[in-house]
Image (cartoon, rainbow, N blue to C red; front, side, top):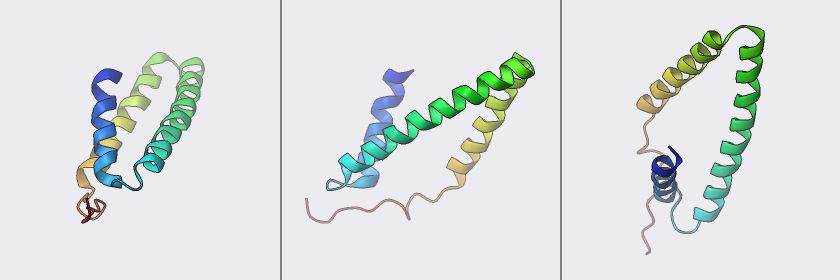
Amino acid sequence: YLASVDPISRAYIADLAGKNKRGRAYGYYYLSVGLISLGEALLFGFIYDTFSFTWAFIYTAVLLVIFIIVFAITDFSKIIKKEENF
């Protein structure tokens, strides 16, 4: 999974950030991935222990659908800043 997702996300971040801010963008990306992974793992474990594995996976599926919808309706043309000087 990581071998297929990591290169794509790195290329996408490079396109969004531009040459001058690429390092900072990677830093923010990996910081957010780490913090979100920690929080998600704790919440998933809590739901798994408190309710059942079925509810834990339903929680994950609902979040996945929400984020797919958010990604689909986001207008990335307003976000991408192309550098004019190469």
